[in-house]
Length: 370
Ligand code: ADP
Ligand code: MG
Image 1 (cartoon, rainbow, N blue to C red):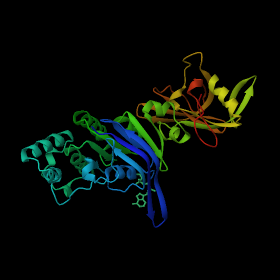
Image 2: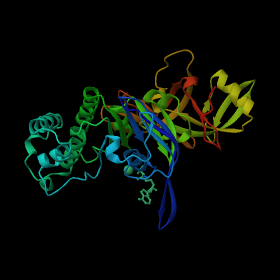
Image 3: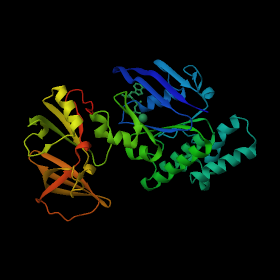
Image 4: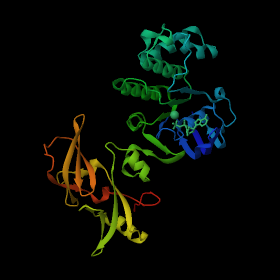
């Protein structure tokens, strides 16, 4: 069993530029055998968090529990954790096989046990052909696989993976993510997968923890985060193409609350409960978010409301299309799975569901939802 719990964890660095608060009051629970992704932009504190869990960076404040045991002062070895980093950290004067066997020899395992473990992991990661090659002779992608293999071969109870596939060719990345998931199932290990890439996070784990500026923003499944972002940052950070954001004035027309985007004819009607909440908050303005996937070219139900836009640009996303439209001062995107052949400058009537509108407080940027 291996659970990891972070309680009010802080990490401060003293650097030449002064004090850096890299992680602030972080609370996070990773369940036994779970893969959790830690997702966020560069510099938000992901690597610092991972290094504190591994025991190679001191925790400035707070408690780390591994299996209900306070682990702050345990050595990395006592924690039974394996790490794979973006920058490999391999022994370059050794062959791939020697890199993999080193940590197993330290555990005083039998030679045939060691070679069997190496065989299994190297087949999984497609490096069985290069086992006798010196790691200096390998490409960046191959070195990253070896680094991953070295973490996996130790069979620890916790894996910490920090951007482990960033140097691997795009088309091979998803195969490796599938292998990581398989390893998780077969070995029953608990994993924390650090990445700045939302597609990777969604592909590798059910649960995603999102960080920004040293702070945890939200933890949830892909759907929870996508459909109920807790604040404007999360709404903007997840979703491709990015969510449409518009500042709106709140107006009331015969008791119906309307959200009017400035200098355009875009008027949105929120669903009843949210409208009531907006009314109670006495706001004049609100930030509205509407995902490109939640605007439709055909009317799908009677509860849908309409909006207008003039087509500007068609962006091809593989087989899908991001159609960009304009209304007054606002550009917004609509996600289409088929090319309906619209010409530039054509006015379209579009449809959205009132309960798909995301509303955020203009100052706190927190979600407003009933
Ligand atoms: P991420 O992995 O999300 O990119 P990091 O945890 O590496 O973020 O860094 C978080 C912040 O801490 C950044 O501002 C970074 O510059 C700073 N930082 C990281 N390591 C050190 C260090 N050893 N000394 C000083 N500042 C650091
Ligand atoms: Mg990092």
